[in-house]
Figure 1 (cartoon, helix red, strand yellow):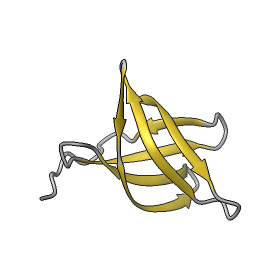
Figure 2 (tube, one colour):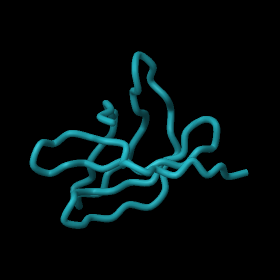
Figure 3 (cartoon, one colour):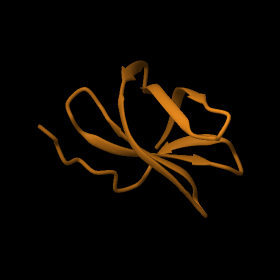
Figure 4 (cartoon, helix red, strand yellow):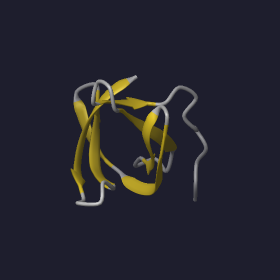
Length: 76
């Protein structure tokens, strides 16, 4: 699912995600680790209900997507 992302990029290329927009609402996030592979930059995020999801920045289109099969695991 494509989402809007408010974030900043450091000079070294790392990303700090502040919030994402799904539907009509912006949601604040906490951020976990990030990595880059052939599919783009992946960032683990935690939403308000402590649900973990994976964001992927597609380098060809510069669009953000919640990865298919993102975890619905809840952390306490």
